[in-house]
Length: 403
Ligand SMILES: Cc1cc2nc3c(=O)[nH]c(=O)nc-3n(C[C@H](O)[C@H](O)[C@H](O)COP(=O)(O)OP(=O)(O)OC[C@H]3O[C@@H](n4cnc5c(N)ncnc54)[C@H](O)[C@@H]3O)c2cc1C
Image 1 (cartoon, helix red, strand yellow):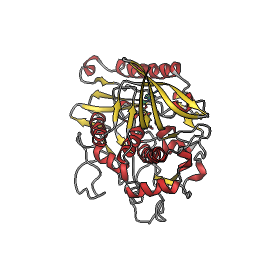
Image 2: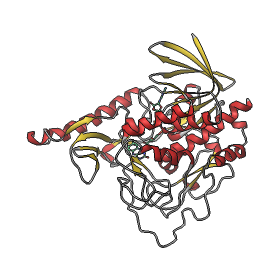
Image 3: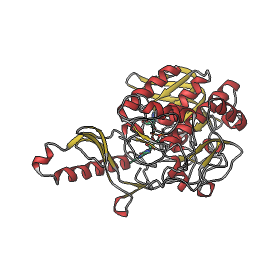
């Protein structure tokens, strides 16, 4: 079997994986990014998601910079929207979403083009249409991945790996424990229709959404291919019911254009980390914090991200980033979205590059070293005392829970 070697290999080209790969490559590491689809951005693009949730606490304070802010800026590069006027020097434009928070809409296809440009600029070796199908370990440490594509199987070695697969697949393949949680049915898709109250890309082209968190639409945990098939077919059936109910004339103007190519499962599996962030940690402080994540649903206390939440408890040689990092309960709900994927992806990528350069396991890299590098990237690693504190003069933003 052919063998390839890198300093850092990132599995999964969603927002977390792209951020990790760029961050590691910018620190001089030789990096490969392995993605099973021919799409970059993961759920954020192939799931027809279109809202870059807030990088602020809801009280006017920016809570994340670095790659999280850079990616938000690049998400609107090929599309009709701007980053929100009034924030970060932007004076005019239309962010596509109301309220006063630092968030914006993007065109999924446009975001994908920008992510590719960012990877190219950073010099990341991108492997599309390539799936990680196995891992080799030595003393509980991942030493190589087995990947497969139409050319066959290849062994990919690295000094450090990042699991950004959205379902902790590297850690699972290495025998590490994971946690799971329930899901609700959802269908977000692109259609030829005009919904002024929803997301109008341009005249006659929108993204629509069906599904919500009601007991009838509860789906439970996803444990593999059969569940994914069941989930996707139920979403298709919801869509057919919707179109079947339209009068024939209306169906000529209102029809599906593009359905998601990823299952819109919010939570698949997350690692059992050295420290699993939990509900009580909102507003708390961690000496090893590597980033700040805000509550995307409402204004309020923010979350610091301990470095230990990126480190699987039982498997070495790998960090997790994005929605498969170590969180549970409400913390998982907060950390499973795009801004947190970018924040934790950048932290994991920096740590992986440091580990590879020093020939150490990521668990042996002092969090202070990771923090220092992130600070030099312009990131915010600790919550400022004013974060999450209502100054009393803020216009109320409606609570957001559908995402
Ligand atoms: C209905 C719904 C609405 C949402 N709305 C919003 C919203 O409005 N705003 C927001 O910010 N977030 C929203 N989210 C959440 C958000 O889009 C995702 O959770 C986030 O983008 C996750 O990023 P990630 O990089 O951690 O994981 P993913 O996007 O899941 O990326 C993982 C990548 O790994 C790849 N992969 C998996 N296994 C393998 C393998 N074995 N080999 C190679 N590649 C592999 C996948 O193809 C994928 O590209 C929504 C989610 C849902 C379901």
